[in-house]
Length: 58
Image (cartoon, rainbow, N blue to C red; front, side):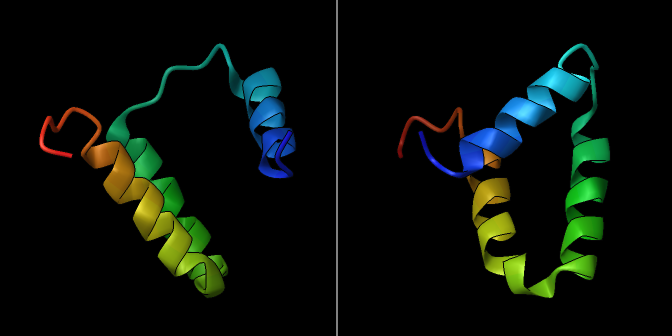
C-alpha cells in the first residue's frame, strides 16, 4: 500500500457517495495549489492524466 492510499481511502469513506462536476474538481485543485504551491507539478500531472484518460494515442 502506498502512503497516498490512506488519503484516497479517507476520501472514499468521507465523500464516496457524493457526485461532483469536473468544474468543481478543477476549482478545488486550484485552491489546493494556491495554498500549497509546492504541489503545483504533481497536481498538474494529475489533472493532465485525468483529462487524457480516453486518449487512445497514449
